[in-house]
Structures are given as structure tokens and as C-alpha cells.
Length: 148
Length: 148
DNA sequence: ACGATAATGATATCCGTTCTCAGAGACGTG
DNA sequence: CACGTCTCTGAGAACGGATATCATTATCGT
Ligand SMILES: [Zn+2]
Ligand SMILES: [Zn+2]
Ligand SMILES: [Zn+2]
Ligand SMILES: [Zn+2]
Image 1 (cartoon, helix red, strand yellow):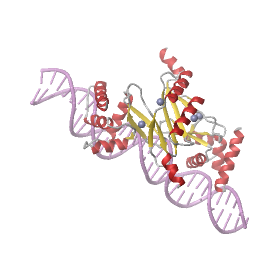
Image 2 (image 1 turned 90 degrees about the horizontal axis):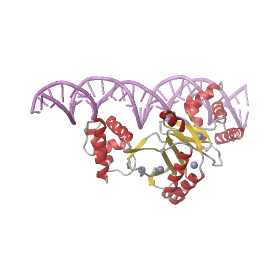
Image 3 (image 1 turned 180 degrees about the horizontal axis):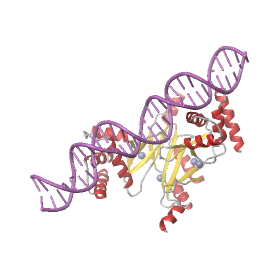
Image 4 (image 1 turned 30 degrees about the horizontal axis):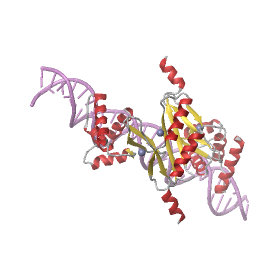
């Protein structure tokens, strides 16, 4: 299914403009192997670690295109750094718990949360609305460490 | 109750450092009259519209202190601009619906949403965790306009 | 009023992101 | 394969919100 996302992303980007390019391919190939969010900087580093010489501007451009096509999910933790993760076109997604202390990021899914958000959006006339959810606090490990 | 927040904020800021200053007072006085979020720039403009000569740096400093004391809620819509609104120390709060089209911001409250978030955080060991929620989409007005 | 020290404001700096533009690369055609 | 066209690419400049710096001002206990 990693392969499926990569194939789908490459195909849809090509049909969007009729062209393909090395930078896009490199970003897609790297992102397809990730399952949670990374910053543009981290993606740039990862792509270069794969041996590709890609400019940071092209990373941002690729991410922008992928976002417009719904192939990538933009995530914002409020720290001034945008993060990106591959998105399931069917709408399956997760949200994030972030430890204020150690910075650890944990994904989670919750059906009741999704239902509540859908009900709120629909009730206000915002059909098919997107949503961002971030839960912040001290994780179990950090709390245990503080007590010791 | 607007007065109550202003009084409480001024008192707690003073006891935090033993000093009071004009810039802080001006920011608190202005913020106390708001009921939803504004950017630091907008707060700066509002304070100056009140006739106070306050530097933007002092606005950021006041907001930082207020945030640390839990007197202000930081809100992030992912557009690279932090917003701030007065926060109820008892924990009462709302979240936001943002129209992607016209930029309108509507606050909302939802008990089921809060319950779901609390359950998720508790289940993962994140006690007393904070959370950010933003719902984005086209508002009713904008959808109607697009059809016409 | 005085001295110690925190607060203030103008400005410089930082840093993530976007813009610019010349050159390289991809694709259709012959 | 050679050519022309048009997109993509990458280096660096530009941008903008937020933060740091530092000389000056204001506050408060004495
Ligand atoms: Zn994730
Ligand atoms: Zn969701
Ligand atoms: Zn609000
Ligand atoms: Zn809430």
C-alpha cells in the first residue's frame, strides 16, 4: 500500500500538468515510506539522504501540489513549522498527541471525535469540512520522570 | 465579567514579578473587551486605537506572560499567524470554524467533542492535556454565493 | 527623593516559507 | 534522433511573523 500511494501520487501529479520531474519523484518516493508527519526540512534531509540532489524550494513546491491534490495532509502543532504526511484519498486519517516536554508525537484515531466534528460542521452549514485536532500535554514517560 | 478577567489578569501579572507596567495594562484592558481571537498585529492596532503608545514587542511580551499564566488562549489556524483570546481560568472554552473562502471565524462549543478528547488523552496517559481544534470549510454564505 | 531592578520600545535579527529567474530537463513532433 | 516548446528545477533573494538586544524609562520598597 506504500507502493499504491506512490504510484497514485506520481500518476496524479503527472496528469495535473503533463510533466514529471526528478524532484517530485524523489519527494513522493520518500514521503511514501513515512506514516506520520515530518517537517519540510526533515523531508529535504530525508530526500538528500536517499542520494538525490533536490532544492528545498522544490520540496515545498511538491508538497504544495500534493496538498492541492489531497495526497498529503498538512499538520500544524503551533510551533511555526508545518508538517506533512501522506494522506489516504479515501479520507482515513489520524490526529496527534504531542508531548510538550519531550516533543514526542503519537497518532491516534477516534470515531466519537470524528462524529462530533462532523455533527458540529454540518449543524453550522459547513458541509464536507476538514478539521485539525492536536492534543498537547505531558506524556506518560515524562510524567513518570518528573516524579522520580 | 469582562471586568473580572481584567482585574484577575492585572493582579496575577503583578504578583508574578512584583511590577506593573503601562504596556501590559493597555494590552489587558483591550483584550478584556474581546470575546474571540485576534492576531498580535490586530491587538497592537487596537491598543493604539485606544490612544496608548505601545511597542509591538511589548504586546508579544504581554501575550507570552498571559499565556504562561493561563489567562489567554493561543489559537493557530495554520496560516502562520498566532491569535489570542482571553481565557476563562475555570477552563470554559470554545473552538473555531474557519471559512476557507471568506476567512470568517465562528466560535462553537460541543460537549461530546470535549468528552471524546478527554477520553483519548486520558487513555494514552496524557492527563489534564490541552487541545486545539479547528474546523475548516466553506461557510453557508460562501456556498450559497458560489451556486448563484 | 533615592537606588535597585523590572518594563518598555525602537530596531536588529532569526527562521520558515515564498518568490525570482536563469538554466536544465521532459515531451511531442518530424 | 534532433529540435522547439514549455515546465520543472535549484540557488539565492525577499518576505513576514516572531524574538532578541539594549539603551532608556518607569515602578516600587525604603
Ligand atoms: Zn500523523
Ligand atoms: Zn479527524
Ligand atoms: Zn474564539
Ligand atoms: Zn475543547
